[in-house]
Image 1 (cartoon, helix red, strand yellow):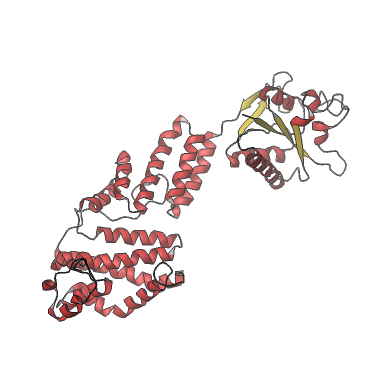
Image 2 (image 1 turned 60 degrees about the vertical axis):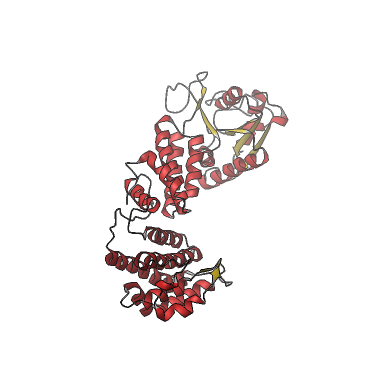
Length: 426
């Protein structure tokens, strides 16, 4: 594997020569200061001709050749960049990051080592920050014994790897928290997996693995893969107890029967948080349909996918018998199913739907005009606030009325997905 060493230049050349000799890179990039108003930039020390370096900082004049000459680097093994704003941290950071990213693009298999020993304070901080943000560089520093606060004693220098695992993990977890805040579990899982691969120390591995399992679980749940979600959350049962209770109702049918509807409502709210209003409306449509399907089956023994006309109120039998038929089965859609519920005298859900019918038709028109349904336009946040919120509340009220009428219990809480690191039940 090819090794590329990136060095900030300025100050004593000896630590930089030590870094080159120790790291034995195939290529060296010198990050140098450009010329100032009255001074030459540090690029002279790196690649200049003649005597351009001082063997001791107290010397008045240079007495040694440039760093490349002292390190015996041939011309094809080094290059340099010059930073005009060498005391500007922003400029130093951006130039270093640009160099690192270019090297990754041009030589993706190469190992990059960033040594921030030399240079101005802004140059060293810029390279260190750029390497830290990149996350793929090995970071090193030349250090040694000190007799004062100004310089390392000559011939005691050595290259020391800079361990940034904990810092990298902390930075990654901040990004994960931002992803969880918008329910982006797939991206959070990818970042946690990459963090585990690159930075995880023994002290952080267990925590990262636990959160990786959780993010994969909620990502699966978001796709309605409830079985996978339960298997993953079981590994940390105590933390996710309430969510496992919710999943048990979804998978084992041990609740009141409308848990899937409630799951759809929570899913729709997550899509709204992400600004995906078409997806949210699609989920509300299915939730509205499933609400009445479960109600008709539990209350009257009517299956909307295979209607028994004998169970339909007589006033609707002719209309229903003319409905869509597949394999000899009578099927009814969303509006017809709600009409069936409304045809039963005193039906609590049907009565409420009849009173809300005009608003429901407005919602269905908005949904049908969506590109996801039968139209060509997208659904806006205004559309959702105008129609979707009403449908959310209508479905919630319908479930409450259905539970009260049938008398089935709620066996576990219905809760939204977590949005913070280290928090299970919210």
